[in-house]
Image (cartoon, rainbow, N blue to C red):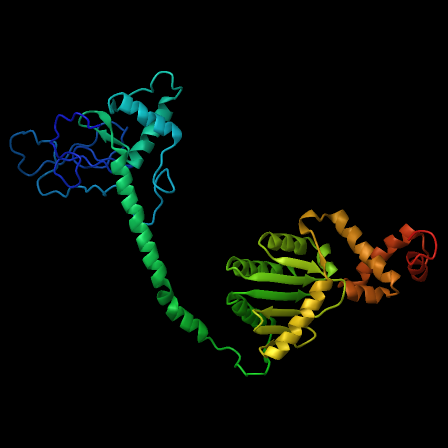
Length: 412
């Protein structure tokens, strides 16, 4: 599909040949003097003549002697950048493909200012956008000398872009191979950060919430297999946000996450949103109607437990026997915990679920304070649920409510 170029030689179009027109994709095609121009912005700027131009010859429109000529790859996108109009190999849109076929049907060339072919329904603006797309990919070449667009062989475009993609893939593989060595100095510096000294068979204690969070973050960042977590009570939104970021990265590495919550987690929007998002990423989260202590186990090699009632101190345990004992307790609680469909929870369902839990514990003979401790709720919150149950059962006292709920008479 070679076009008729009045000023071309048999080598025209070859990369690096003087006077040749590159068929490389270009968003800014070269004009007669190699100056970048827009394909449809009209005539390009005249070339700068040599100091002594001499008489006009057939080569007047060529660049001055000694000037650098663009190679076939001059207009290719830089390595590492996305190819235009195609994520893989610069594929055109369907409508652009039809336009290319129409150009071939017209002999492989159309005027620069060609109107849309009849019956296509395209506006001039759309026609221009499609031509720009074909030029950027490299399937069309604007030839301002002859005032036309010329169709370029798709095989040449495919070979050029394929070679570029293979070159990029090779560079990426090489970069991936060099990455561990490149980051090795940072890894050594990370390992050199002062940490509590390891004492085989002994727990390492860390004081202060900030220090505890830092050490846990370091351990979670190295977690590769499994994280077990028991989180009684209600965690603040800021803590949930930090845990969300750490846990998502861990899950993306292929590790698993199982976490136990108390029913109080069902009463807070932030906790429900966190649990919903984490389950979408593969975490397993259950609710247990029993009191349990805070616990984190990373890869079954390090366990983190509270060492102070206000959680201002934590013990990091690495003794295998102690970790096995803690994991066994976690597995026992996990088996008794209840699975929750976090996606389907709403405010009304949550209120009814918590009220039912309060009622079941009252029916077992637990006091208001014991129920609050069991569910991780405040006594004031439990009192509100008890008030709703009294109205439901028509009970005047807490004793009467428990008796009715155990089936003494009336409802229950």
